[in-house]
Length: 506
Ligand code: ADP
Ligand code: MG
Image 1 (tube, protein in one colour):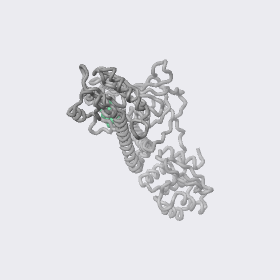
Image 2: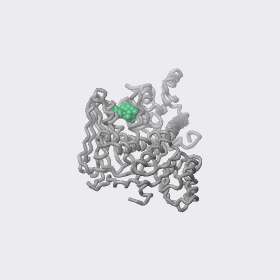
Image 3: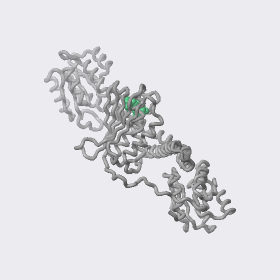
Image 4: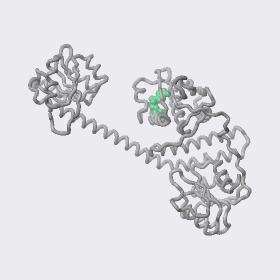
């Protein structure tokens, strides 16, 4: 073996050498020394560039001077195209000065022709060193990426708790507004707020699940409805000089995906498009069937008349943290890519500088039956003075729940923790339904229910639960009380329905 250490395995060697005889001599020597090598030979700049364009050798061995081409030029070209590939000069004419200059210019070693005993071990050593450098760099990159993800995860986890609480009113208030007003304009505004709240909540969830690496549940999405929602969200932030066009070729087209994630894809693309049109123009979102023979695909085309992109930008478009904007995150397209990938779709981009950009999403199609009434929600019967005890330590949610349920016709008792709840129970007796947050302080939800059971309570309990933290550990649910779990974030209509269901009326 040419050198100590782990076997090198097969190596690819590029010879820059004008004499075929010299090249053969070199290769024979390396093979005889036991290297498992394959060779390519070039002797001009054009040939070198052509070979390096689609082939990365493990090492380059180069003559110093050839007719019309020099080893220094070869070295420069190699450094430009493959900076990490080792380079050794093998020359018949190398004096000490030339050798020093060669090393100075970035060669890894030099060997005098016809005195080549040293060649095999020099080659093996250079390849080993360069491989371990590449590996070190890869590990470092991987570590950096993991660190970024980890800090993102920490940030996301820290933010999500606060964000959930801050966003909660956005889900509940619109229902209260709708109850109190017939003005269609106000109701429309309430819809916008509710949609933002839902989106905010789901984004928090999907941010968390992204950093934790779990998948979001899929549902069937009718594109017509998705486009309406996207339109509603965009309209509120659309600059005056941008004209928005939304078009769905067929209102039955549907796809299977997570609603919020897909909406996020369209919003990311649309926002990029708006940002690319500082002087205004048309932003269009068009959904139609992709070419008939490709069968079963939807194409969603998001196009703008903005600044466009050069090749360098196009090449790095989907790299994490790549941005050309002063306050960009460079994560928008990364997440688009991840989401589209996860539903078995593709993203195609075309762009012309100064003219605009077009993103095509190709997604698997699902035909939707029309008029199946999937969105119709049966009306929930209002309360008839039934007594409700609500226990929640989140003050805003507690007061909103109190307000909403009392406007629904229930008699409310509100408690901010287990101790206050116990006091209410002792003073006012047992309620018809108890609604309790899983995270209340002083007395856990399970303990409170057990206390109530001991007081003779046999009614239903509704437990508000965080999606990632089950309300009850095994065996903790008190017997004799039927527990309905309601996942947070809360939507008022679901709370009303849960209460009505718990009371056994429809
Ligand atoms: P960010 O918007 O935070 O920069 P993205 O991942 O959304 O991150 O986009 C990355 C980069 O891609 C942008 O900074 C921009 O240079 C380029 N880009 C994306 N969409 C467009 C577009 N429609 N027109 C021009 N450039 C775009
Ligand atoms: Mg963006």
